[in-house]
Length: 484
Image (cartoon, rainbow, N blue to C red):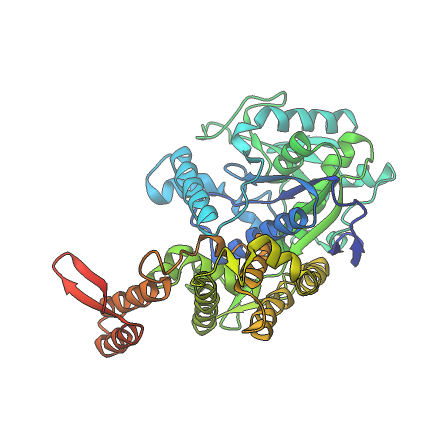
């Protein structure tokens, strides 16, 4: 498999072979608010990487963090060592404790994670549950001679690190950061590139989240958690690290510096993957702009999380993807078409036998065609995770084999490809058993339109239901669909 390595800035072949163990880490959410659809695109990238590696035969160990302390608001302005802790700020906003805020939004994230049909990691590691590991890592960095203490905390000394022959900031252009370029510098900070490993609680103030350490009461810096937790679960060196392109500028270079300072220059991660931003209507997404949509927002507009997942598949992860409601509607129609196709295949009354052949014999007899499409699909996913073209292969296969291949062959291929796509095609139920999914979706669409008081459009959908051989009846208990 080939992927674009942000560290080398080129497409590289993963050196390990199928069957080998491969460690993957994705930077997860800071749980102070609802996750946006921009964030979900990054987490879907992590899922697609894991699914693809498993599809290709690798033994994958997957880890994802949940940041529930230490991520300061100054990160938005270019300096993650300034501002207010996002969890403490969320607590003030909602009149809850920081711990309650963290639990509520972490639970919401995990619910959305499963709704998007993502692969469960070996562990979701939370920063607050790994304070000892973070302190231990800072101690190692201190012993290596790369820290200094100022009034507000313990800082990583980038100049000392480079003077010892280490490279710093290879992933980004950190050497171009100027003091006061966007924010006021932290008093006592030697270099604008230096970053906090441990922050002290303000004098005379007790934080909701604080711990004792060898340097004083306080809390970990944002960057230290990912280095400490990934090394705990995947080792001092591992294979693939994934995150959004915004993490490429400071967070990920700082992870590298911390880890390699502690281990004596051992290369920390071999391949770094960064997903591009999601735009909205051709512009930037932002809470201040009112367009930082969540799964809850798209649900109110009648779109399921799986429609959003399909939408993500239509763009390459390294290219900006433009979100529009029209585009999401197009993804919805395409996903429904795909699920309808699966239902059609399942209506074959000779499902287990085709012209006297067992399903196994049919697949064996059609192995050349099966191998052809499998190879085409594999070629696309191995090429730096080219999901738009992989999706195109799926539709080519459906369109070109229509009427020329046994249903069993096409169905089995679709389920095989869905091990990567993750669209839940194996959960589509046969219309022989109950009301077809297509009719059920039309019923749901009609209800959504009625709820929005779009009665003419709702009536048009009712007629579509009748054309399928079913009728919808409005009862005091709600709409009921019956065979005509």
